[in-house]
Structures are given as C-alpha cells and as structure tokens.
Image 1 (cartoon, rainbow, N blue to C red):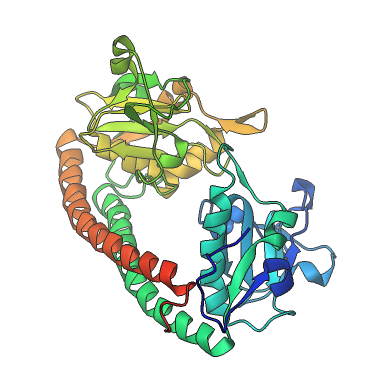
Image 2 (image 1 turned 90 degrees about the horizontal axis):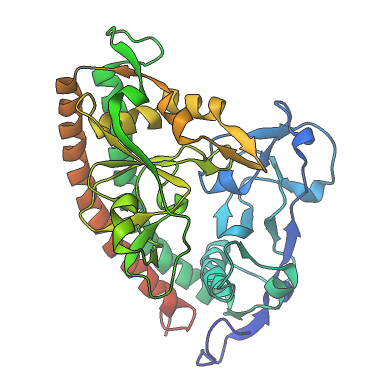
Length: 392
C-alpha cells in the first residue's frame, strides 16, 4: 500500500510507518480511574474540541503513556487526525498514538503534514464503515515518502506559510463566534442572575411545532441532502462539508424537511455532545435524520434567541445535567426539551438580537469564503509536497 505513486525524486526513499518511528498506543483508562487531581487524561474529544470536559488521573502507570509539550499525537479511531500537544504533562488515553522519533530523522512539522495526508488516504480505505478505525498492523505497514532532512525542512517551511494564511482566516471566524456569544450576554444578561427581570417560561410555550427526523438510511442516489448529528458543531454552527443524501416520498417530505429559521436539536449522542443545537438558515431543501429534532417557534420567540440560549454556557450546563443514559448513549427527548425553562425577553428585543447576529454572520461568511480559498491553496501545496514538486 503506497501513499504516493513512484514518480518521486531519486533521493527520496519509501519506508513503512512502522520503520519510520514508534507509535505508542494510549492507556485504557476506565471511568473509575477518572478523578479531579493528578495529570490530565488526553482524550480524542479534548484534541478535537468536541468537549471541554477534562478528566484527571493521580495513580501510577508506565511513563510510556506520559505526554509532554511538543509531542505529536495521532487519533486512529472515530476521528482521524494528528495534533501537536502544547499543554502540560498529561496521560495518553486509548485510541491515540504518541509518536516517538527513534528510528528515522524527521522534521516534526514535515511529519505532521505527511501523517495528516496519510490518514486521509487510510480513511478512504475504510469506506462503508460508520466509524473510522485503523488497526495498528495496517498503520505500521502504510508506506510513506522519506526525503532527506534538508528537503523535509524546505517543504515544511512552504506548508507552514500557507497554513498561517488559513489559520488567520480561521481565527477571524472564531472572533465572530465569540462576538456572537458576547452579544447575547450584553443584550440579555446572565440567565442565572436574570438582571433584567425577564419572565421565565418553558420552551414549550415558545414553539409551534416539534418533530423528529426520519429513521431511513442515506442512499447513494439520494435526491435530498441528509442532515445528521455530525452536521451540527459543538458550538452550534451548521457544517455542510460531509453531507450524505436520501430519498423520501413526496407525502413525507414536509414532515422531515427543514426550512430557513428551523432550530435543529441533537437528541442522542455522548454526554458531552448531546443537545448540540443548530440554526438552519439555508434555502436548500434538506431532510433531517431521526437523531435530530426540528423545532419551529411561535410569535413569542425568535429562533435566533432560543438557539443562542441553548448554546450559552448556562444552556449547555442545563442540557448536560438533564440528559439520561440509554444503552451507553445520552438522550434528551422532545418532551424533555420542551420542558426546559427559559427566560423570555420581549420579542422586539429578541428581533434586535437576531438582526445583529445576522450582520455578524454576513461578515463571518466573507471570512469563510477567504478561508475556503486559503484551504484550497494549502491542500494544493500539500498534494504536491510529497511528490517532490515543491523542492524541484
């Protein structure tokens, strides 16, 4: 299994990953091992920012599982990716590799880019599976190009420059996200304190319709984009990058279709991710999956307000505390969602909030367009890099 075709510079070797470095698999911590003291346990969701929850371990295990600042970590199950650890000393959880450069000489940044692309190639070979998973044997046998160290450093410098461009665009988008969260507190105050004395109602009082999505499976020849739980980010933003498609009968389309202004609630997931709440602001016809709940507001609420409330620190804490476990997954059903108590500002104030959020989103979309261009440039350079085209 080769990572690139053999049209490479003569000075480059092709080596197996297992012969390039040592990859230490993390320790299989049990929930009973978790504590509030000791060193942090690094889990995949902590690296992907899928959860802010942190567990600690104060016991004794082998030093091979210890991670230090500057170590490269590879997630090989569920989410495939490579990450540079910048935190304090920590323990490595299972489903993660720590890279130990004890076999070949590598520039760390070059290796990071190389593995990032290699994981995409490995991931494509796991098609048909709902959960990406790379075995250690398959990982070690995967073949990569191995240029001389000076060429690695040149390639890494070129990719670093392109990566900085896309990081600046991403940072600008994050600033707009923070601005949206700050605007909520500025206009409505802390929901716990309720300094403005707003009435307290339930979500049930503010909605006209609450519907589950379809349990039908995606199809290769599907007509409609199919929104699933992974199409909503932890921060509450819609992500349309990895859409699947589905067919539905005409008589059922209205039941499962979304329209501009619908709130989408992720009712089942891990405890860290259940309750992800997105706001659909698109004109394209899409269908929602059964793990999502579609919520439409009445004249007492603007959907932007409920969306922001459930994505606030206060809202996420409510959702985390109320979810229950069903067969290993956390769950909040439609009735429980509607029972959530929520402050209800005057609709005029909610509408003002929505207008300001839309203005922020318009600026964010421009930044998003710039990010797409910088990512296109970076990915183009990435594909050329490991064929030797950047240094010839």
